[in-house]
Amino acid sequence: MYVLAMPGFRQPGPKGRMVAGYAAFAKHLGLYPHSGSVIPQIDCTPFRTSKSGVLCIPGQPLPDSLVEAILRARQAEIAAKGR
Image (cartoon, rainbow, N blue to C red):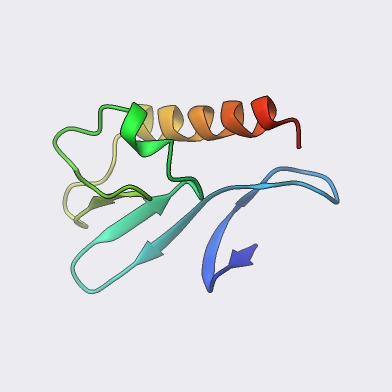
């Protein structure tokens, strides 16, 4: 699924919400949970973050545990909103 010209992951179903998107740039890769409140609540050390995502360089990928924590937090947020 593409949203804002960014590939991503959507919940299943006709009204499934976007969980996260990802993008590759010249010097970094980014994972973006489509919410400004997910990243600030997760410890993303030592990776660079913004309000909307976490960044890594190609030689230092995000650990699976961090990706999992981000996706679980986003899914919990979606469930709490009831949409």
